[in-house]
Length: 159
Image (tube, helix red, strand yellow):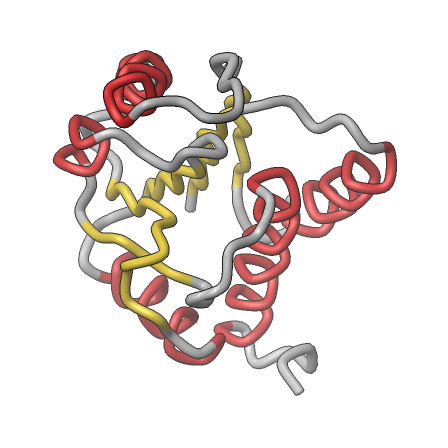
């Protein structure tokens, strides 16, 4: 299986970079992982709604240009479906059996995803109703994808 992660913004903290590198290494046993890191737009404090939409649209157009149309696209969004690790593992396995050998996960910038991006997605996934920094979300997502592969292989990791 191929997994592509499209994400807005650079990782700044070394501890997050090291965590991502660790999960890239772990995941190499199970899938081909590509991480596409796109620049974020400057988002000053106290922006108007129209300015926020403009920022999301600029980031969104960069995201859409990097979506492989033959992949199954999952956007991380606070209003998406919530699944347990076991449910997500089963879902990913089912997608693979159905012929979806390429999954693309999208993590937007600090303001979220544009409507254009959301329309390109097959589904939305939420890890919580809480808000997480998008840099940290990259690590959380990679850990959960790794956990899914371990669960699906019957390997001891999910407890």
